[in-house]
Length: 629
Ligand code: F6R
Image (cartoon, rainbow, N blue to C red; front, side, top):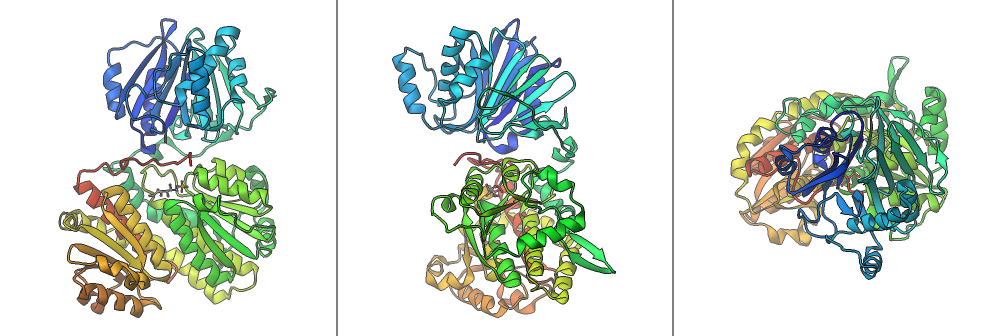
């Protein structure tokens, strides 16, 4: 979705803005622009397409001022074009906007009737006109913003400057995130901390309908009633180096390679060694209202308290979108098998509108890498309204979902920049495994043998992933031949069924192939009709209790001419003899097979897309963080 960077300080705003927008490129966008003070007025430059087009246009331009705003646009209202690119201007006002103004039609009519000259097809420009009308009368930028806030419906984060106020920036939000970076005599307002991380580690997260007004070095926050408020400053420990490619050709490839380390980081806080034996303990689940409160609890008290809370749930709903939904789908198997609690898995955009039965015995567990996905956030709000407990699994600490859920678990996977989720997925599956164990333990359903088996399997994962990363070289070559297929049918059973869906999603979003993920047992109920020699069948068939059944499905597909790519355990001669290509994963536990099987599928999608010349880190039409419905 759109990226926003605002800067007020002694450095050249143009450089800070371009640098910041580059850090947000991964979010996906189709045009870019900036408005920066120059000789006591605002100079605006916009360009369709990538940031390099904007950079080309501003070459040789001077910007002498110290205040500026910049934006990368992901089109919602109006086609991607220079004219629809931000910043938008009306009168003395320049503004950038992320999100959607839902009542834009009504505002447009009103502005037209009042004689406003509307230049673009966007909803964003209308906000500039509204602010401008009030600012003309009052010459009070903050007051004008405070007044128009009640007029706006929808999801938005907005930065406003006026061309006769070279040291004043006002910003507000309702929905998409907005974060204020506090630096030495310089301040930033950004849609994602990554845009300012090179300059500061101290951030203040705006809540909905709060406003920040920055005047010179003075930063003030206001609530929706116009009262000044104090906001907590959060110091992040992410470094700006973590969001560099560090020698890899793509962020996605780097993140695939980071998985041994990211999984170890997911596991570390939750496995403790007591009396020479390892145990699962979920720390910092808490269920306090503020993440900060949890930090002060000591580990043992925290775990005892957590168990008391976990034991009361009679029903669990896992709610998420996209790749996180597929991770959650694996979690359902873990929870039902280990903890014997009925668990439903829901796509967040469906959950919020289907009137799920929720009460105080229900846990709604949301999963989100970004912690900003609009539908997932709405699910948390709905669950809280209906009196259910909410627990979030997030990668980005202090994200909106993390802040709003009662309880918190973190992936600790480090920043994920590639639009296609990779290391977050494997960390989610790992954390769900631990969560199911903790749940089973709190209900006294976990034998020490099962606990040990799971922990042992999880602890082996980093080394086992190093082995499957060897498929990088394999697919770098194989991609050339795989290109010839017209479609890909991914199949699996049990915990490996969601792996099939995740594998197919990676291929469609990166290489733009038609790919489907299916439960292998469903093949005869329709998809078998698709199979011919142009169709690749990617079957996830590790050595588990469903092996024989999956092999039968594989034989059926082969008999109809399908070309078989199978993912199996070790050197399985039987699978090899049926398969056109065989991908071997190390012998593992049923609960860790899905992670090991996912890695070669990530590499396959990466190399197919790369060999076709597609932009792997920023696939067409997609955004990393989906902050609108
Ligand atoms: C696919 C992908 C998306 C996200 C989805 C949810 O590779 O990345 O499907 O998984 O948009 O995002 P989060 O996890 O941030 O809520």
